[in-house]
Image (cartoon, rainbow, N blue to C red):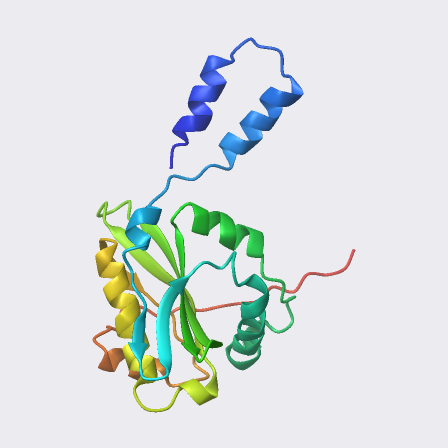
Length: 204
């Protein structure tokens, strides 16, 4: 994706002395990402109340410490194939994508307690020019998996994606659980198989 801000800055300063201020401006521009979902549009996604449960979109920069236990529980339960790798989420990157309207965090709470989350990355397809949402994390604590909570939560996320103009949702399911069957019942199609290999690196 072309970074117009960076290109304009460089063109405007061709032949200029590289001062510390200019270097800082270049660094900021180089890290700039085009905003896909505007904050005003995200604000249109209202919480949904289901008895004692609340589904909502929240900002990860506001609940970083609170959500860490969910990320660890998800890693422990479903990411066994990667347990030889370090578990070290980059929350600064999550926040940077969030600020650019490219990362949305949906939560499930009961009486204020965080029980689950679904994180979606937004991007524009180079093939169709339409918005695509790609699931990064979908995890509910065992106590929140009873009844139709998961189904209602996924529908909430889907409706939010529609509101933002998303036309396609891509998810991954792990072979260690039965999530594939769950998503097929919600209308998702099995269109590909993904394979993973952890590379062994010899210590030099």
